[in-house]
Length: 166
Image (tube, rainbow, N blue to C red; front, side):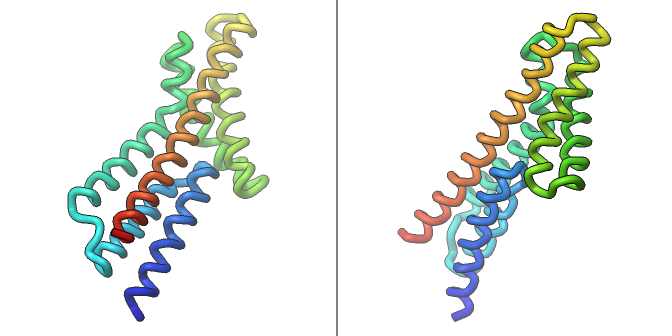
């Protein structure tokens, strides 16, 4: 009975992780927790799979943190604008969450990244169009990483589910 409960808990963690990943939160870590639970109760995943899951979690977090910076740099922006996008995204997510929980996090992150990168590049270039082009790079990169994290969370969850079914 205990192992059935723990497997249900693991499934709920995977579903919650998937939902959280779509909302810019770290759902991959919940799937890692589910993997730990299933390892202890059902013997799956093996250590290699668990380490892969851990690496996926770490890489996804690093990519999410650096997304705005990378997006700005890909569009020809300065390192300072990349750093501004990184900090603006974090500040925007915090402020957005305070104003409108959950949806405000996403909107704040995107708006904060754009605004900080735009302001930095506008001050450097004095050209609205070019500054906006560079700042949109931060937004697109953050959205791409959001979709990537969601896909990774789904993939990890499915890997876990199909491994348990076998």
